[in-house]
Image: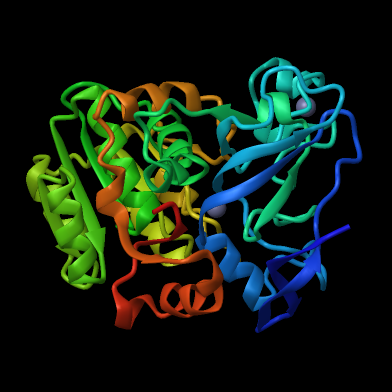
Amino acid sequence: MGAMRALVFQKPGRIAWQEVPDPVVGDPADAIVRVDAVTICGTDLHILKGDVPDVTAGRILGHEAVGTVVETAGGVRTVRPGDRVLVSCISACGRCRFCRESRYGQCRGGGGWILGHTVDGTQAEYVRVPFADLSVHPLPDSIDSADAVLLADIFPTAYEVGVLNGAVRPADTVVVVGAGPIGLAAIVTAGFYSPGRVIAVDLAESRLAAARSLGADATVNAGEEPEQLVADLTDGLGADVVMEAVGVPEAFEMCTRMVRPGGRVANIGVHGKPATLHLEDLWIKDVTITTGLVDTSSTPLLLRMMAAGRLPSSSLITHRFELGQMEEAYDVFGRVEETGALKVVLGGA
Ligand SMILES: [Zn+2]
Ligand SMILES: [Zn+2]
């Protein structure tokens, strides 16, 4: 058995790019994938801080990758060695009630968000992918590996949990609170439905500039009365759809104040603290609030959009590294205020 390098979680605050044994196939549905391009997610930073107690010492992190299949176990039917594939952040058993409804994120058969969480993940030279038939997507040659890695998590998350749950319709006023990678992907994919106006809210001017370049019609700094701007632009009514893409109580509560009567608040943010639900204001407003974990059921559609050149994912990639520069990439991604990082991609050149 050989050895490879991988990014290993050691304890809160400590990770290391170190030598570990190569992954081996165990279950008949497994595939081994050589990682060609990989990224770091905001969720990985939560893990690093110790916010995700299911992640234990010794776990290889990462749940987003593009790679090449090098080995498949006997039960794998849809991919074979040599195939270039997108490794989805969600694994799917394909058999449980939720998988049969395409709600893979809620899989009860051993799938769901497991990579870099309850099994070893993608921030490594090789990764074992369980349930390979339903958990990887073969990539056409026309799609670049570094671009495609953004379809492992952030684009399906923004599209399913933000745009689809928010039920964006033509002519809607859509507010996206938080213009990080997820919020920016929500702005891009809201465009599939021709909203009348998209307004982005963030504290960082660099992110508001990125929002404008990706299609936001108006941007407002979170410190400069965004609620007043939304009210002014909607004759005092509020927005049709408001998406929360931050994950802090203040942002969620702001979203519930910006939505119009009968409108929708779609929460995408990963929350670590309770937020107050102001039912004293909301009970009379017919407001729908949605939450969700991505299912990645939209990944085939998003791949077709990318192949058609309609998904400007590369403009979200601000920093590129070699795979072996994992610790440096974590450092850059972890200091966004100074580095202005959106997505960092390792490999894929
Ligand atoms: Zn993620
Ligand atoms: Zn399942």
